[in-house]
Amino acid sequence: AVQPVVMAGGSGTRLWPLSRAGYPKQFLVLAGNTSLFQQAAARLQALGRGTVKAAPPLVVGNEEHRFLILDQLRELGAEPAAVLLEPAGRNTAPALTLAALQALEGGADPVLVVTPADQTLADEAAFGTAMAAAIEVAAQGSIVILGITPDRPETGYGYIRTERSSGARVVAQFVEKPDAETAARYLAEGGYFWNAGMFVLKASVWMAALERWRPDIAAASRAAWAARSTDQRFVRPGKAEFAAVPAESVDYAVMERCPGSGQDIRMIELDAGWNDLGAWEAVWQVAAKDTDGNAAVGDAIVHDSRGTLVHATSRLVGVVGLDDVVVVETPDAVLVADRARSQEVKQIVNRLGSAR
Ligand code: GDD
Ligand code: MG
Image (tube, rainbow, N blue to C red; front, side, top):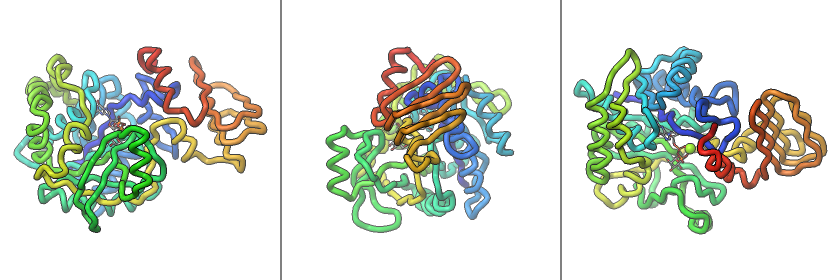
């Protein structure tokens, strides 16, 4: 059995002011006609219709977004197996643990196909092929991750080095979010892949790995799960118990520790036009552009500018003579930023206290 899981509880602060606490980036239509969350759900739906027999997805998200999650799934004609609601995000390791505990209910031990909700893929069929291979390997007890060939020294991703082989390659090293110098060295040395942020593994394999390396997260998550309440599709871990779970990502908690540990970890290459829409720079990358490299979304007039992204939501925005700039207009907040520094939008949100 295969159980898809969508992790949809992130905050997407680098895409402020479009991405807000009440309506974060995974629920926004940033590329194509549907939101990033809907693209993730549709991808998993298609997987289930192929050779892989996959159940409806488990969605792990924030309490505040429960209706957004259900409404956006219904727009696709999809129903979740369940929506696991966190009172507050504790990063992805606890989120995946809730999904694993839900999947283990009733004695089954399915292969979890865990995907984020903040990416676009140009080639959905390539995703299906890579996943079908990953599921076969994971069914034998391995942890399988997907690797993307890097094209720049990005510091926001995990880096994977594999042993020389093909197919499901043995992962020799996993380094989450290296500093700029290290990322540049990896790119120059070659042989490294970016972690696509998707994890394929049996529910029991996740729990065993977590018990081994982060028994604190495992125990606190189990306590929150034991105190859960269920209301139709919604499952809520105990509020106080979940608040006490240490916040950590899947990558730091488990993936970095697997190579050489005895827990088999494999990587399958994914060549599918993968894009993580982390910051405005990436949104500009995937946007339709004019011959001067300008992308205009909404009511915008751009004159004598190059490489500029304008995203207008409620008013007409005019731009004259600006190169490599991002302008994002919303009813109550406007961002004007150097496109190359779009990672630093996070600093504005930090000063605000949250993406309000
Ligand atoms: N339910 C839940 N709860 N989901 C969460 C939480 C949480 O507390 N925090 C993040 N998520 C969701 C996000 O919405 C996103 O869909 C996914 O989990 C990944 O979280 P990010 O916060 O976006 O991770 P990242 O982009 O910094 O890094 C991960 O993805 C990269 C590729 O995009 C890592 O796996 C990297 O190694 C990887 O390269
Ligand atoms: Mg991300």
